[in-house]
Image 1: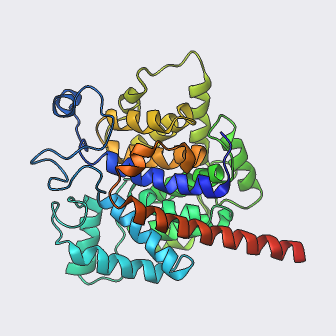
Image 2: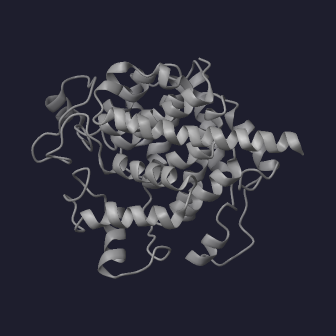
Length: 370
């Protein structure tokens, strides 16, 4: 399915918001029989969380805190016309941390994750500055919020990688997590350029590595520095020791294309790669569903949701990747109409995409003038 950049970029971010909201009701059911008792054999739409469950008090179509934070990133990018880390941190201080109290069931989205509670404790309780409060959470939360950065800088992979890495390390400093986060957004950027998630995507990404465009080494190995402290990681952010994070999507897409390999139903990908929240469980499942259902947004996100476990992150990231491939025009209308504040969200998304397009146009004109 061929789409233009505006359609693809808008589809990616709206797909992420839709995936997040779809996961609100059935979030974190690790007993699939229990999830089916509460929501039926197959979840097909937005649902309201059950009393006493995560996000209790919210309604079908609402965003979780992950969607809320993505909205903060989106707002900061629009307000500043570019990625401005100081402004992003101000949004986090005033619109997120000020509205939470460090406990799980507080703040926007009805539930605050462990890593954000850790940020709250260091920033609010201890008064530590941004840049000194990152922790070791191995989750996908940085990917979820930096999707907007990937859209804004899709046509400039170097800046995309730089800004995503820097933003990630505000809350997560583990180099593996940073590497996987940058890689996912590089994949998204590739799809926004009109590529698709197939067996050759890793080769195309590695070509950019060899050209010095993406900040990964061309072959596996240790970094030249033996200093593993946070300041060392930050100083060499974007110089990752291994390209493996870029190789994963190509291998998974190859498995999708191999008739001898079958996961049926596709929702059981959660059992193959794991249901927990860690990034190394969520990403392979999202890549699999996004490669298998590259032209079928509905099937992709619903299989992500019906797999249980950390289905919200799985659906959010799958929604972004498939949304980038089918475009906004390929997303079923009912998912758009059922999303709360869909008009406002879509307006902000389109504003960001227009800013990205304007910069692309300026860069093109500058290259032509040289």
